Length: 284
Image 1: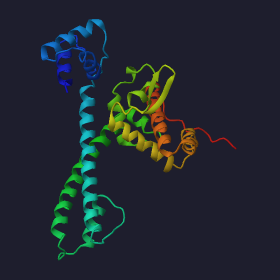
Image 2: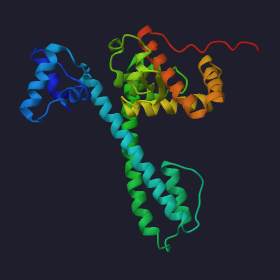
Image 3: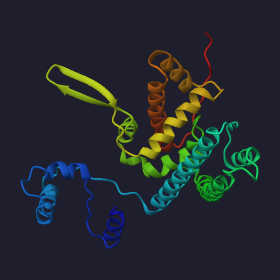
Image 4: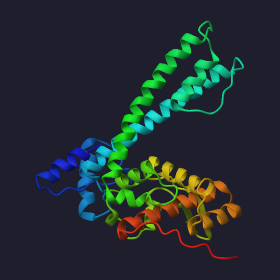
């Protein structure tokens, strides 16, 4: 929440260190009394010792695109909630219709209930909000498509199967800079797609994925993995590996693993300046 302060201090050439809040909280929790002076003194003592992890603050351009992406995700959630609400209201009175979104959804609903129906006025109010939300989402979608079209890196990221405009732009402006990672393998851990590890004495267990990092990008990568495994028809070594993994460990775990692999591939494409290589299918 203090990124604006970080940018302003940098602009006047002052040395600034942004500390990970989780690390600062863990270090300050050992103090007996919590107060603003004690917290300030503790933060000052952390810097010379080096017992902290510095957080990279995104550029102002990336923060603007991130705001657009977060707003779009919120509108999609609101639209979905409205559609589910209308569907449940109609289902209670025995009215069903096929899956549809946007204008087709509103058209199906209005065909089912006539002007004399007691739910007509209630449904019309919800559909009016639904239409307005859809218009605003389309406006943000145009901004995202324009950002992707004008950026050469984003266009190369979209060559990965399953990765669309929204996923590529989200990855581009969430990572913000590929050089912040020593290795592409650490991108999966940064996004919370690697399992937690509990080790003590003879006990050494790997648990569920940590789910740390950016939730929005992690969700889009999981969706990209689902599209790759279930909808992409063209063969690739990535899909072949994911299908074999899905047969062995199940669909959900395989999608998480493929999402982590996609994140690594996206980082490599970004740093190498290349595009996705589909490869040739080998004969059995």
